[in-house]
Image 1 (tube, rainbow, N blue to C red):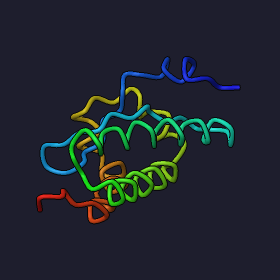
Image 2: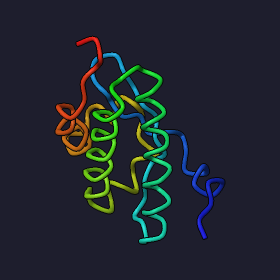
Image 3: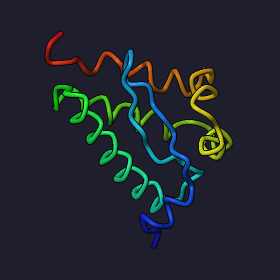
Image 4: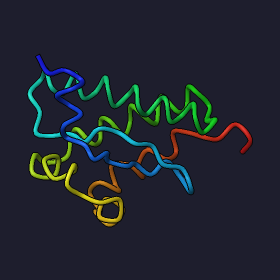
Length: 114
């Protein structure tokens, strides 16, 4: 069984843009088996929701955003998933497939004061 410790070896963290000025770290994904995808999904959601709370975003909208980005990231080609852990923040920002996975979900959240 894949443990959190085993998953940590794939860090450095992938950073997801959560709107202007906000960043949420998430463990990078690999070409995953079903079991690994479940572990990744759980850990990703925990990290993403922690970021939502940290930045004071509306919890329900934040959860929708996290689920949306997770689903999109898991749809990336195997080669792209395998490279995520080796990319810098700047490379992630410049990768159109990754940015599409993230940006297509931005409308699912709002800050409470907006």
